[in-house]
Amino acid sequence: QVQLVESGGGLVQAGGSLRLSCAASGVVLRFYDSGWFRQAPGKEREFVGGIRWSGDSTYYTDSVKGRFTISRDNAKNMVDLQMNSLKPEDTAVYYCAVDRRSSTWRPDAMDYWGKGTLVTVSS
Image 1: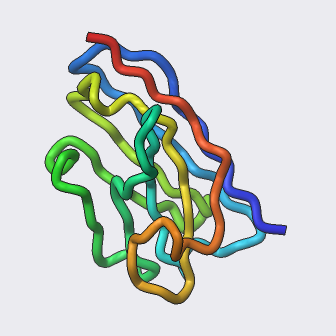
Image 2: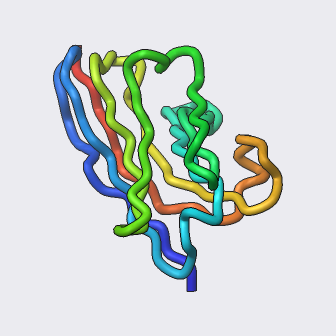
């Protein structure tokens, strides 16, 4: 059974930092593209950042480039999202997801999802 469990969310002031972690079981992350997505109230789920199964490429949506960094620990089978210089518009539920085949970052293409962790950034 595949499980992705996010942690690290919380309340932070604008300009602060948080580190999200996604612990995987039932899948070996180094064989999957791993991504972080977010969904704010009333908005669609959107791609935030991703790392290829090979580990040699990372991708980010424009709004987080230079502020967020995705990384993967193969030994721990975890993928993290370091979020710096947080803004109120980063407030959302953040989800971890993995994809074996599509090589895209479309939410509807991801194979497995975690249940999410809430990030709230106060102004």
